[in-house]
Length: 108
Length: 117
Image (cartoon, rainbow over all chains, first blue to last red; front, side, top):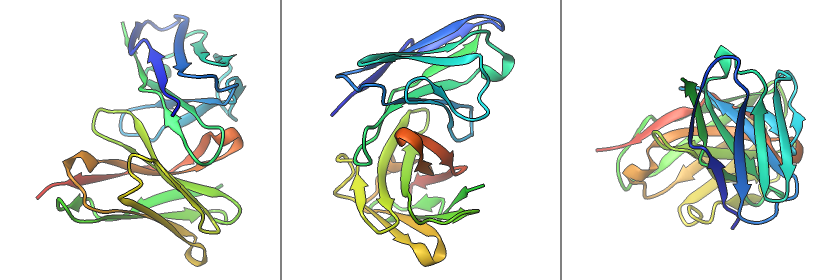
């Protein structure tokens, strides 16, 4: 099975900062990667799919890059609404899905 | 637009069976896969399994021996059954739909299930 890791596990930042979260896969996953934002008590929200495609309505300050085993989610200018936990997720079929352990972005 | 709503008991006794239903509104259950995901307190997300509207299923190998997912297209619902639960099964359970490139674009609000006597 493919394992997903994320770094850092926690990130402290200020409003306006550029923030980058890394997700790594244990083997190549092409660009089959999605990113989610989750706030306390809420369901995750899809931000990006296929590594770099923004879901509808997602602000352009979010961007995703990568292929193979290393991927990044970047927030170009952190806004108050962006303090949350971010997860990466991989699947390349309907037979198996796996999530990364999450990265919490909190206020410095 | 399509919305999902989980329902079921919030408290289950250890060794008993957890049963949840997800109701799909605003669209048909047909022609899509439908998924259960859970999140233990303070932990990450775990894919439990999914079902195609025809009834074909896929399960997480770590839970496969205890999980059954079923669909009732006439009611626009799909269900989760997890047997022999323990405290480790305490979690928020979400239903979700994988969309483009297997990314979950639609989620229910989640329902908390506690396993305790």
